[in-house]
Length: 88
Image (cartoon, rainbow, N blue to C red; front, side):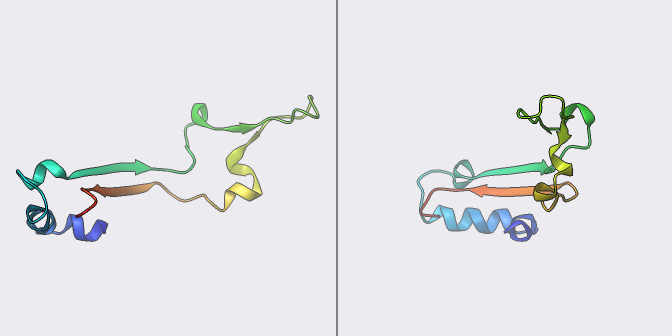
């Protein structure tokens, strides 16, 4: 979907299809959300930590270092989401 949206004619093709379904200008019915995303932050002040409440003297450990969560590590990327009326 992202590749289609980013094509030179992507927006015009979306608008042409919506024009068949909506009243008014189709561009007013389209919302594109283009956000950068990273599962784990590289900024230390934004790290999440596990705290062991059973062993109060155990050190906190970073969530991203836990083996169950490490599989979700990936470099940052872009997420492009398209919102249109249900009929579109």
